[in-house]
Image: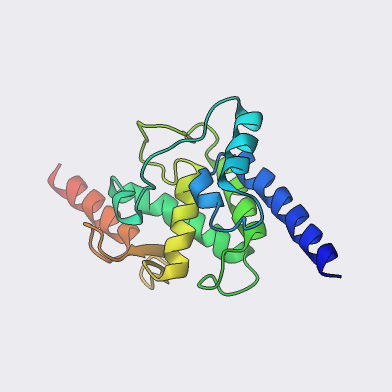
Length: 183
């Protein structure tokens, strides 16, 4: 019985490794949920899928991700899609089905803005690894998805970020109105 369970767990991990690496998730991030495959096996799978080595280096931080106020809008949209697709609590473990669905749907909304390497634009997450970091931050309490009672949209709060913890849509609207009055 236990050998059957071990086989089933490895088969499930192989399926998810394929799904995550196909979307170019960094192997160091995939190792956090894929437990029955060694990091070297994940690197080999990544190479066989993309004919290039996986991206190495430091994993991006959620606090460094937003480069402009507009970035928050896209990050909140992605987080909202994930929250809608996730049947459980988003502060529990990452729901891989919801993650893959949210990313694939986000890519259909912004197909020409997805980039694996720098320079990244204002649309964030720019790649699947950044999307993963957003969901991990929500799970770990480093970020929150709140609802704005003024503009009636969800907005993302990133604790420790250089931007104020307010609805960025409202701030952008205020800036736009002020520009139109003075300009």
